[in-house]
Image (tube, rainbow, N blue to C red; front, side, top):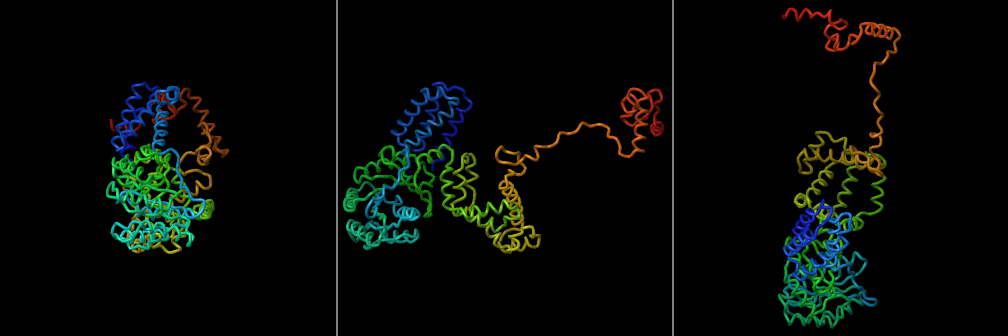
Length: 521
């Protein structure tokens, strides 16, 4: 969503690099470019003004003029101010000390509240909580059934005593759900309320009544990240009507300019708590302003990548693989490779994972073209092999490749390429695990590798070596004495033609053309 903003900011900072000092004109030009980039990204005008004012004040101060690298200092200031407009610190859910924690969802119709309720329930379940989804949207057709299906997919409990479709009292359902949660010992109640097509006074009052009835610990305003400047107006109306405590961004994986969504936190003074960035139940996580600012500036989000890896990969499995790699290249088999591949798949889309790495914005098009089905194709090839072939890929010859290709529905060349790439990767991983560094690359301090190649012996000075055979050595010494007697050139230099093999051993006066040359003349 923020690709355009990232590209514009990257181009702006590129012009600053290489400058030892920044004049006031340089700072003004940079501020103007940043202002244009933010406005193009649909960030609200009051937010842009406040942001640019802060950046300019800090950039014109001693903070930049005394810095060793002013350009980097400007980037640091922009990063810090971007974190500030995104809410500053990460905001956590406030859980109730006694009884179930009540979380109420509010927002416009179509913002994605019902889907988000399931994602939030799934996320809380992973945090060792027992959530209950409550259907209080009794206006929209089939809203109750939809929430029930979402709850089943997320693997969380559901409460919906009323059929909906205009039938039932949502305030009473919300009250009854608290008692139901206490009886069944659910520690979090997520209340899904009716959405609005606009600023609807009647439905806004209904949301206020539900809030008064259940006294929620958190009221989350769900905002569609793609709706543009209207997000700010709607957020202000909900703040006045319902008084929410936090914001949730939905549809963050869209390609619309999402600056307005980033303006909500600054305009309302309520922090963004969660972000939904996909259709799957796992495409949901806590919102970290510092990490989002880092991603917008093209510096990646390595912390989120590490957290996701820690949740997916088991420590025991990682230690087992590391021990195998230290045991030599052949200890790591295609079965191990397949299990690692499947664990990476659990982390999510490959393109999204690569997008979290620093500097990946430069190859964004290539990353977006990565097809996750390619990973499934690799898995199919490996699963079409026999256990012996997976353990010893060296056994795979031409006929075996043809059989594997037929079994996995791919071309023979793809099987060959996979096995060759596996051999290369296994060799590299084994070398790194044993501290030898990456094969074919010079040694890196502290990483091992390259030591043997860099410690080559100095070449010995070239010279005439003496034979170990006494008879042959005597002949060589006699020939050397004869050359010395012939004077300069010793029968080997240009003076006697020795270097070109013409009349070796004769002086200039004795030079005579070979018979073949005489015949030609």
